[in-house]
Length: 112
Image 1: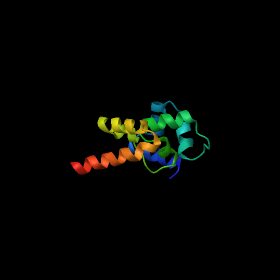
Image 2 (image 1 turned 90 degrees about the horizontal axis):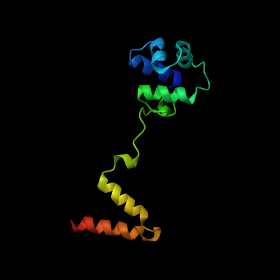
Image 3 (image 1 turned 135 degrees about the vertical axis):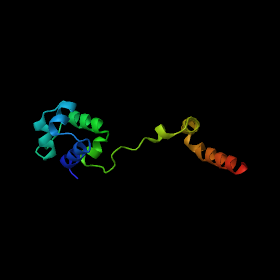
C-alpha cells in the first residue's frame, strides 16, 4: 500500500474530507490531494510526522515501509521495575562474568 493509499484510508476512517484534514494538520487541501494521489515524491519530514501523530500511526506505517500501525514499544518500556534493575545490573557485569550470573539465576529458579 502506498503513502497516498494509507493516507486516504486513515482520513476516511476518521470521516474527514481532504479540506478538514488539511485544516487540522496545517496543510492545504491541495497538498492532501497531491499526497493521496501520489503526485508528491518527496514529502516533508515535518508533514509525515504531523500526519503520523494525528492518525496515531508510526511514520514507517504511513510511508508504507511497515504494515504495523504502531511501532512496538522498546524492551525498556515494557519491563517491570524489578526487571529493569536486573537488566541494569547484568549490563554492568564484565563480559567474562555474565555467563556466571546467568547460571546463578538459573540455579535460583531451580531452588524455588
